[in-house]
Length: 301
Image 1: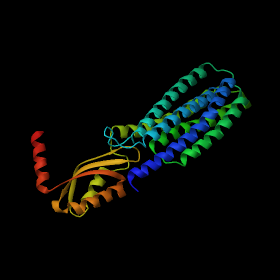
Image 2 (image 1 turned 60 degrees about the vertical axis):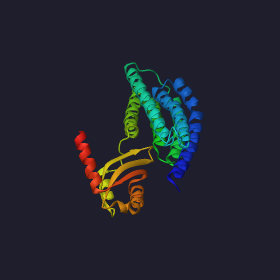
Image 3 (image 1 turned 90 degrees about the horizontal axis):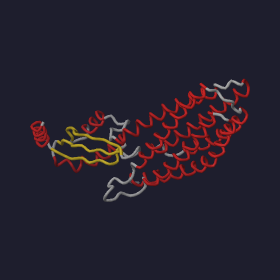
Image 4 (image 1 turned 90 degrees about the vertical axis):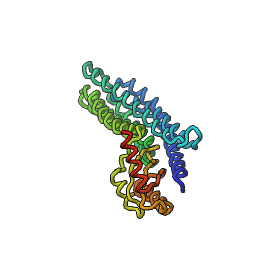
């Protein structure tokens, strides 16, 4: 099976998982919003806000997964695989915005405590917890691409928010201590914020065409140089088309240029097997060509 076929099947599976999760989340979002407003609970309203953003993020993720399946064209010769990364970026920024809003609301609620309906909070939060567990289970079973990771981040944020709301409702019901509601909201939001920053870092690495985190360039060069007929690899560039598709370009110095037909398939197999690089552009050259190139480069700079 080719890399394109494999990618197409995985993205198709991701689309289905995201759509099923979207249906579950959207069906409960309205219920939790109403419950949060009725109980006047910031923890529950925060969780309701997460549920709404989950619906939007899952919708964005499903659209991005569908778009990434489109074939390459003259204007997009690599295809639309990076739509997955753009969808993840939108979702992470969306999540960070919600986190900032909840943090400000929590501090305001700490300064001005308000009555909270503990029983209502516990009932609604418990139902939300069950829904979030179901959606998280659906997503965890799917492919762990960047798009699904970003959507799962929203759902795990909801899951944590439901637990926080449930605990807040229980404490308020038993003790009447109102600050627990904004304090738990603040704590959960900070945890989600840190997780969001980690996903954002991975997204930016792809968009900036950085070396994939699982690839050590020095180790890759040594592995290439160990192939029979190869002297060394230089001007090596590795980047990601998406979280699961990686590309490489390099110049390969050979003992003799006549070895190239035997060396090329060995290098392609090595790159795919050991480094997960399915698309490679390799330029062969001899000692003399490499020396000439280095001299020209030195003269220019």
